[in-house]
Image 1 (cartoon, rainbow, N blue to C red):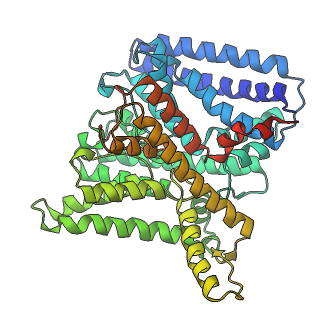
Image 2 (cartoon, helix red, strand yellow):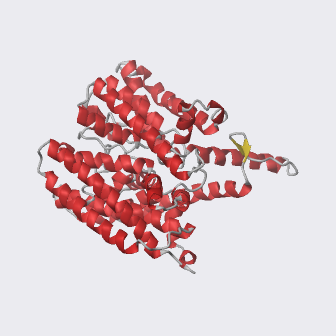
Image 3 (tube, rainbow, N blue to C red):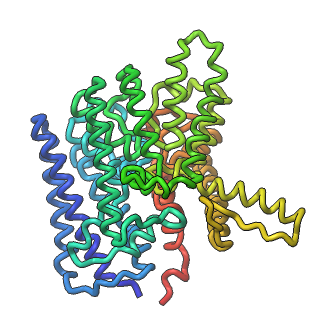
Length: 481
């Protein structure tokens, strides 16, 4: 049986937290003396009242979370946060329909970066701040944030964390899960502040620097400008963003070990090694054809490096229009969107460790055919991987590809051409910003059919929760006693 009262209780706590964040955005509106302050006060008040109505009547609920409860809570949190988070867009009239407002919000919380706003620069500062903040909150994860909060309400969080960070991404860097969450958020905050300072020094306004640091560290890709990072036309800004996008694609547990000088913990980390290698390799592949270009080599290299890191980390920041890319480059972009960055990072995609495991397993299967009596275990990071975990990884990759194909086919029935359908499905599932085909990066879906926006919203959620958490809810056996 589901512990329904306690599920509602936790949702109430988190809605109260969301209302506080909405009120913070109202302070930004107040600072700039803009009318959207009323929108945020109304949205925050509604969210706070609903949170209290969820929280107070369930105070005496049993504080026990089963694995099944965890899966339901994790899925509901992202949906409920998006429903209440879209209120400022809807009440303020910045987006014309609830569908567009919800799409914009879930794109933010899942750090996808697709937008339905036609003129970003026309939005008031409070809305732009909230838009960036949704990505920052979603980057480290609403559930990881809740782990730092729920202990104050005597609520455990292991089932929540294991439900969100499924598979091989989970690693407790401290004995207590709440301490792990606090440490991860501290690292996240410190890098965000450091980037904001560096972007300010590089020439951004304080407001733009804060917003872009939010969306860089979360690998979200929302910008305060219509032309994205190209607006600033600054090598210093671009190199700063490249550095922090790359950092954001690293497992935050690895960053913790680096910052605490525990280098022995990462010495044999194959995923980190391949992350460096893949990024460098694809940057070289993309740069090679430009050597004969009349454009300055340094500018070309910077652009290639920027877009390579932006794509592999699924951030989606751009310096040029993707519609102008060659077919060869588009194919490289497509491949990088599939791969993604490291597990335990804020990036999306299949993740490098899974791709590594699949390639190694294929190689070892061939060797086993040649040497049928040989015992050849699959090793990652110097450790032998259990066969059941190898199976889980293979199933994950297969299901990921199947969902991507189903999403693309569904979009073709709505009138998308084949290339656009593939791009829209992949960019949603991988929680990335750019898309290929009908529209180009920075992606704007304002003219997409309503049904397409809901399909893409579902793909964003499935991709953010790494598939199985959401798919489990559609299994009849999940709901049996």
